[in-house]
Image (cartoon, rainbow, N blue to C red):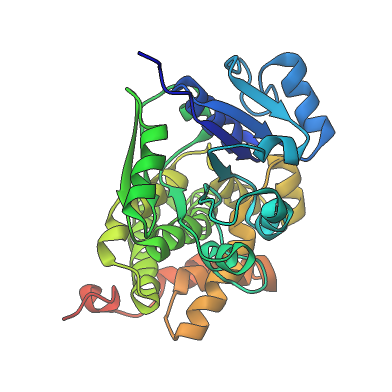
Length: 342
C-alpha cells in the first residue's frame, strides 16, 4: 500500500517559537520549511542545524529546512503557519497574498493585536486575504520546553471545526496535546492580554511585594480579561482554559516569560529600552498594553491593572506607586466586579 505523502508546512518566522513549532511539526512527520527574513538569522540555522541563539543544543530534524526565500517556502505548501511578531503580521500576509491560492487556509501562533488599530489578527487576515478558514494557536507554551519535547497542551481555535481538527492533528504527539475551540476572539484576547498582566506580576515581584500580591494580580487580572472578553463577545469558559488561565499563570510566574522579565527589569529601575535590550527578544506586552487599554476604553470596561501597566509604560508612572495604587483600591463585591453577576 502506498503511504500518504507527508504534509508540507511552511512556518513563517524563525524566532524561538517558530523554530520550536517547526521542530515539533517535523518530528511529527511533516516536511517543514522554516522561513526567516534576516540572512543573519537563517544562515546560522542552515549551517549549524540548530537555533543556537534561542534553542541551543536542540538539533533541527532532517525534514526541517530553513529558508530565506519566501516564495520557495510557501510554494506548494499544504499549510501555512505564521509565527512572526504582531507588528509584522500584516506585512507578511501582504507578502504571501500573491504567492498562495485564493482558498488556502491560514493559521498563526502570533500573540497580540494589530499595532495602532487594535484589531484582532483574524480581522487583519480577512481584510488582507479575504474570507477563508483561519486558525489561531495559543496557550501556555514556552518555546524551549516544546522544542525539548516536554509535555505541553494548547488550544487551536477556528470557526471551521474541520480545520481546527486538522491543525491539531499536525501538532498532537505523545507529549503534546492540542485542544480545539471555535472562540477566535476569546483565544486571541487571552493570548494578548496575559502579556500585560505578566509585566505587572514581574513588577510586583521585583519590588518584593510577595506571593500574596502575585496571586491577587493573577486572579484580578483574569477578572479583567473576562470582563473585556464578555464585552467583545467571547465566551467566559475560554478564559478558564488553556488560552486564558493557563497562559496567564505560565507567563506571570516563570522567568522564561519575556514579559515577566520586563516587569522585573522595570522594578530594578531600568528603562523600557534598557530592559528590552537586556532581554534581546520581542516583548509583545509593551504594545499589547496600549492596544488592550484602548480596547477597554472603547468598550467602557474597567481594567485597573492594565491601566496601571499602561501608565508605567507610556506615561512614566513610578512602578511602586502604580502597584500601591492597585493595593489601595476600595472594597468591591468580587463576583460582581468580575463581571459574573446574573
